[in-house]
Length: 72
Image 1 (tube, rainbow, N blue to C red):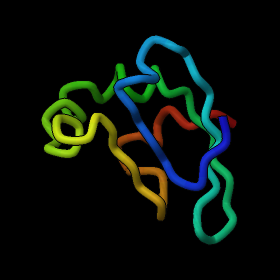
Image 2 (image 1 turned 60 degrees about the vertical axis):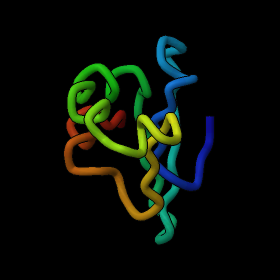
Image 3 (image 1 turned 120 degrees about the vertical axis):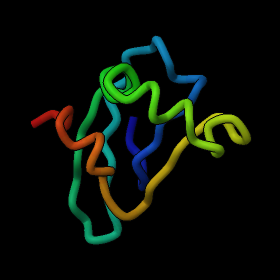
Image 4 (image 1 turned 30 degrees about the horizontal axis):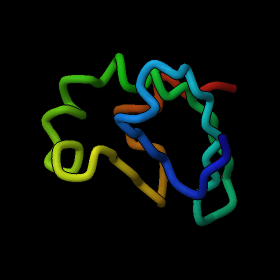
């Protein structure tokens, strides 16, 4: 899946989706949705946006807590 922002969605949990995210500067980053979610589940589920909208997004960069699972 290609995206213009880093995204985690409740609807993608368990799908093992590989997401390629291109930030505003044109830098592409790739990550496995389920790996990022699994390693950060407690943090993500504590976010208000997760409960209110069912997702978390960031259009500027890969969050620091998600960088350890970036695919090369």
